[in-house]
Image 1: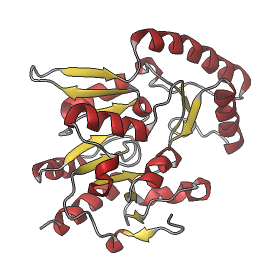
Image 2: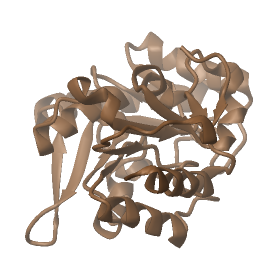
Image 3: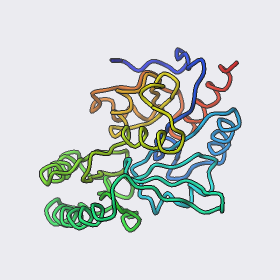
Image 4: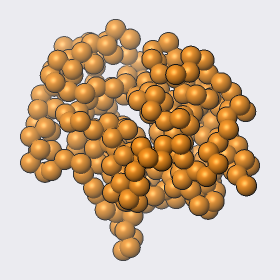
Length: 265
């Protein structure tokens, strides 16, 4: 387990990589937008024969236009619960890990927890993208507000007391019922779409992220990278990425892509 962040220049990429799994917010985005040069970097990775799959805590509804527009193989949303992929007709297929009855029951329970958080944690507000969520809830802590750490911790505690999983991204506190998470979502989508066993091919995949909700991937993936703005979360991380870019956010992703492509034979 790494105890310090090593520069990207010391990273030896996989000799025969299969693809990149990536966070979205503050990894692909800069100030809430994915810049054109980041989309170009994704396209160049795809053109080189690599698969690219963003895995995000963002809702499936929010993810739909990006699944249509970006040159990615799929987007896994809501921390592994649901995925989007383009189909032959030009539309999107929506894939779920849970059946409809389970999703319906969980949704009702999650709304009760969200209402409790808004009623008991001062200033706590559901994320503005909540209308597009189907399998989780999210409370804003840094997207359009600034929540103190003690209140972030209170929101997490309320979710966990209700039996939910909870994680903190660079902008939201996410909670959900079920065994899925970013790692399980990665395993599921690679198996479902490509018949690939992630655990059997771990050393051929790259993960890049920026915050505490990426640390399960940092722990599990031999080729784990952080963009430079991960420095904000280092004191809270039990598992660090193995290498870090010089640049922050989308620029850091583009830096990783360029480095990886120049290292390929």
